[in-house]
Length: 159
Image 1 (cartoon, rainbow, N blue to C red):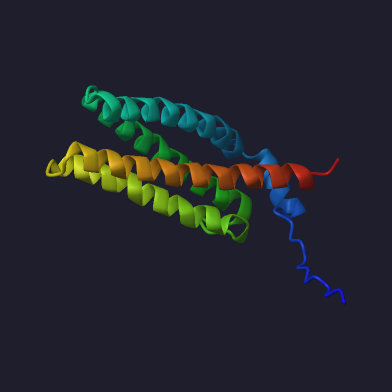
Image 2: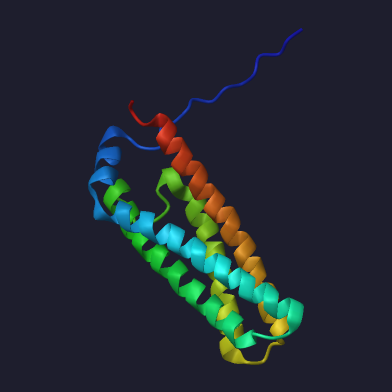
């Protein structure tokens, strides 16, 4: 006997009004520019961190790159919050992006933990780099969440 699958109603990512606000605001363009910039900064930093871990040289460059990555991350979070306010009427945790925002806060916490460790000066470089790599893994998960939503938005866009 075949058991019927439970289906849940598919909810749209954007209402027509939200889609119109998203398409009108300059913050969509800003997010569209900052996201790939952040990814490039991430890739450069990842190479520098791995080089340091593999060779023991380049600690200052790796550390500086993580701080730059953190700055870009914070910038994209602030501008993303403004974007959410314009599009959804909420600074953060709009239902359409709730889990992306939750994970973003974890990513930010890990990046800031690294910066605190660096500022404190009482941690071994290996411990610092481990936190940075953990932050980068979380960032990749978060980036995947946003790419998934971008794909969903394109699939539901009117023809």
